[in-house]
Image (cartoon, rainbow, N blue to C red; front, side):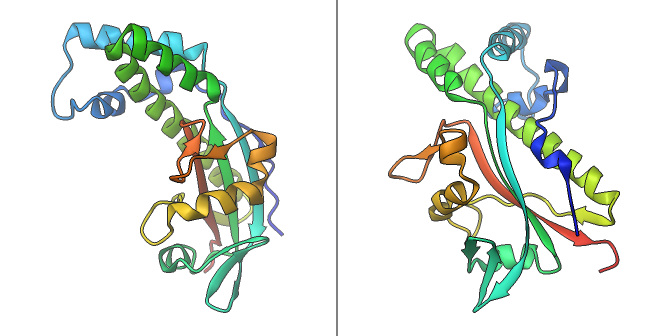
Length: 208
């Protein structure tokens, strides 16, 4: 039986761990080097954001079963063909939600009044914050799983292919992320706080 303690640990990241090239890509500068002023603005906003971000995660490791054309993870299931293809050989799945917290949304709202440029840069920095934390989180789970003879697939989130955004709420409820982290949804199935992700990651035995 697979048992992973690391699913409950949020990785510790420094500002140096964040990929500046990704922030610049979110700022639509891909292929172009930022000027000194833009680079300085990014670093200034990253420093302010560091004191605002409150990364939290909730996760559950579950065995995978198949039933009546659906892939089942305990009390959460879907008929998504792409997700079933992604986890065709997986025995377990990690389900998780991760957020940067509501203070980030409040910061961006304030900046939209005082400096739209800073709001735009901070939003880009938040995207990289969340992606880097999710990437490092999945990497630490993969490392622990490897010690037990398993390897992990890339994470798979609602909104990709036929695994629609309508699965956000059932996944949140299954993880109790609404109660544990106060995650909510808008009528358009957008997550609140906005800098939040939900995802699944399949785990296969190495000898498959």
